[in-house]
Image (cartoon, rainbow, N blue to C red):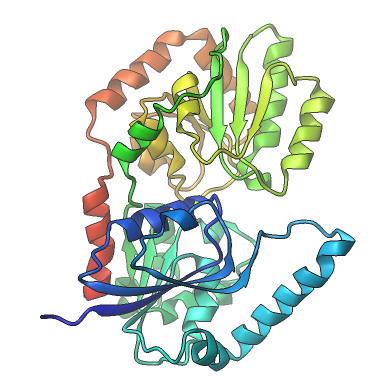
Length: 380
């Protein structure tokens, strides 16, 4: 019998993000007969904790909810977490000795790019090191050219779109580096999404057309410009509603914007929902107003539920929507959001066309194939 692969997977927490959801979906479809997995969280927190398979061992550095404010009473705990995690990052042998109990791993896996340094600094030099990059880090100012080069220290760099792959290829210096870059599809459990979407919302369906957007509320998602264009359309007599499902540190600012624009009757901030999929069924269209993305798997979820899509032209969109065949791609600017929404309102036949195309297509992701493609790089 082949010995089980011993794998350490690291991620910040299991809060309500796309990378977190994808990781848990991946874990649920691995075999405990083949792998012995330790999952190390910086913060033991998040809606997806309950979905981690029981055979996966969970370790953590801190416990409790994420602290996103600077309230006086929160500062001591916040400071402790920062100092404690900084010490363990600087002296990784302490982490591996006292928290991971001197375990040895065949593979060490950074499930997001933000954990890259922690994996690369592992005292286990013999392990294969893999990083999974879910966002377009080349579009983000937090990474210098030197920072981007460090990813080539990994044995494999898993990326989720052609754009990110091309960007890495452009800065690679050798054939060995080029061969480290691999594009994979994020695993999406379509059957689970369809099942969850049938949950009763106790929400009366709007008489107006509804544009839905789901995601963590922070500036990159562009909810502010979506609301401003919603207000403009309402003022011009184009009746419709916008529903935003999600939470995040920018929620207070977005709530204030709704008040300032006087659109509380037509723009609904629904907040975080453990199961957002019934809202997809109630909505008429899905709109992605993001300023930048990595590979927004929420669009695959919208396609599973057969929703016509409007999306700004951020990383991965042309690839996901097959250059506009599976959804309406607009320029990454505020005016284009206005034009796209107006186009769908004025031309209902357009959304019907997209629904029919999506129904007729074999979607570009399948759970089993996606999981197998990632597993391949565990074994290879």
